Each structure stands twice: as structure tokens, then as C-alpha cells.
Length: 303
Image 1 (cartoon, rainbow, N blue to C red):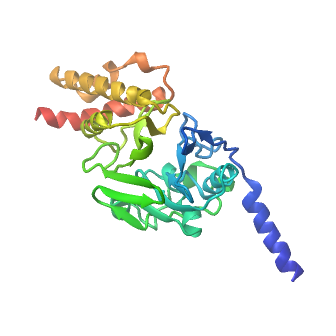
Image 2 (image 1 turned 135 degrees about the vertical axis):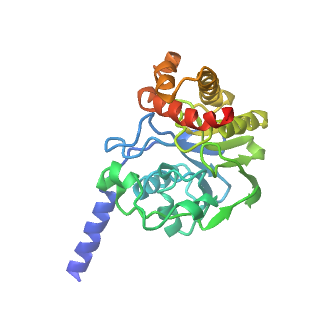
Image 3 (image 1 turned 120 degrees about the vertical axis):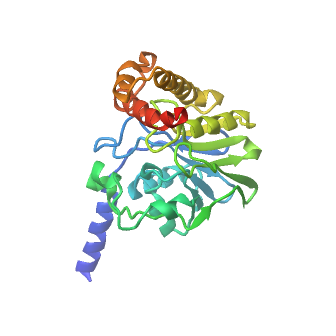
């Protein structure tokens, strides 16, 4: 019996050994967020470079994006429960990039329903190891089991939790990904848009579509919002979309001009410098990649 008790104690100590040092930030009367660092994931930040938010639904928390690991999700709930102790009944994943949903397993193990787009069902496979597993420390990644949503959204839906009505808005074209979800809470005029908004670092086109992304941002601009929360960055008013919108608009203009001038991709990469953004975090990492992705997509417009 002593050996069993000792083993349990050791397991618990291992689980508690790693801490991110998270601090919840009050955004408005109902929302607390953990705002990540403007960095790429590595063994120093251990994936704490993403936003994860908790919405007070009266008797439970609604989580928007569960973060990069089991340990992150566990610590996030621990600290927000010091403000108001409640269970998590629903978690909504805004898109399939793993820094936003690898905390799902912690909440699912405590009975939460995980909601996400149909793209999870199509593109996330249980036999694939997430990139996060290779890029953060084993202590930070401990107990993380990739857990995709159990409820999938393929069109706009309504979700009523206690006193708050929640609208799930399905972006039915490729934008940041091919399966972006917006979460709108009319009563508090709050809109969560995931990685359609970056406001503390350069956005990443990666596997997105620059035309669809700008179309989605145009839609967001027309919505009745007081609080606007993206996937990266701590600006939460209407200025939250300025960096992403202006950068992508200028990038598209410059790539189209390069194509009109019949520049090949190497010439475009060399000439589209956009130095006005060079002091923006991750410019050196992301900009040329964004030019290349935009060029390869937009060149089909001229065919």
C-alpha cells in the first residue's frame, strides 16, 4: 500500500512540476484571456504564444481555444477558477492549428464538449504527431493527448448556455484555414475570430488564402462588436484588425503588381520588402514566406 501511495504522489508531483506562469487578463465584464507572446513556439515559451479565453456563462466557463498542451489548459483553469470557481462545459476551437487546441484533452477528461469545424474530421489524424510535441519541452507537453472535437460545425449554429446566446459563424471559404470558426456573443457584443487576427506580430499565410482572408476581415468589420479578440495579440477593440488587414491588403497589391510586371517568384521575393513592417515581431520569419504563398496563389488570377 505504501508503494502505491508513493507512486501516486510521484505522479502528482510530475504533473505539477511544470508551470507556464499564466496570468488571466480581464477583457470585459464576462471575459478573461491568457495572451501569448509574439513568438514562434519553442522550448522557452513552450507554446505560450497563443490566446486562450474564458467566458463567464453564469454557472460555467466557455473556453475559446484550449491552448498548446494539457499542462497549459490545466493551469489556465486553475488560475481563472481563483476568480470564479466553475466547471468548463464547452470548448470551441477556432481552427485546426495545434497551438490552439492541444489543451482539449484536459477539458474533455473533465466532461467538457469540444466543438470545432469539420476540417478537424478531415485533416487531423490520430496517428500523426503534432508539431508541438517536437517544439516544446517534454515537461510542458506531459499528458497531452491530441483530442479533436466531438461536435462538428459545418454551417452557422446557435449555442445557448445559461443566460448567454452564442453564435457559431462558419467561414465557408478558405481564409486563414479552410475551416475557420467565429464565435459571437451578442449580449456583450464580443467576437472571437482566432487567427484571422494577429495584432502583435506579422500574420502567417501558411495554408491560407489571401483573398478569402481579406473577405473574412471585410465581413468582421461590418459586425456589431465592442470587443474583438484574435488568436495572437492583446488588442481587443476595433483596432485589433488593423495590422492584419493593412498588411494583407498591401501584400496583395504588391504581389499583383509584380505579376503584372511579369516578375518571377524570385524577383518578387527580392523586391517586395515592405520595410514599414520590419519592426513587427516575426517579420524576418514570416514575410518572405507570405510573399511566396501569396504569389503562388495569385498567379492563377492572371491565367
